Length: 280
Image (cartoon, rainbow, N blue to C red; front, side, top):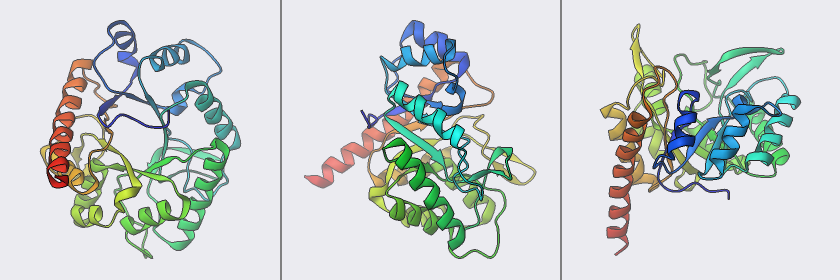
């Protein structure tokens, strides 16, 4: 139950739920944002449970604030634990970021200072979350538009250390790597080459926008060619992995998302063929 097919999935968003229930599209799996289903009942949770009967589902959290200085919100954790028990997701994932301070919540996924102190905090929070859920989670690298200096280590070393210390898996967002590399002037390939191969268990792809001299991870456009190229390089390093197409703003018709997923599947097919050729 705790695996995703090594194929492309799409984010399940409200405009498409009825169509998915009615037509059963040829999609390998769906991801939902956990917090959207924290209620004790209602039509949204009922629809998700129905879809879960036919498709693997990944729960992707946006509000745990794993890197925050505050303690984890126990009510938030309780609701997530209940949802996991009800949906039995293939994967539970969260963002490697902070979103709250002093009990005040910010509607953003804010980057961490890459320091030893921050590493200790985030690892303690991940351990607490995994203990509460009774399972390993995946953590995702976020895009960033500023840095907290001085840093004790580059971002990729921080991400690798989190996986090593906690035993969690990594959800490698290729678009976020590309966006941050362009914004901060580091080499995206250096990032990839310093992430441990066995730790990466899932990949995200999305579209960005250029705004006021920065690349912004808006999830509002198709995947850009440069990101597809970086995805291809990622598959060469990490092998074929479950891959999600994210699209959260300016949401297009369902068939557009399915076409993006089919494109990712084509890259995965090539990666499988290359892996087979190397093995023989």
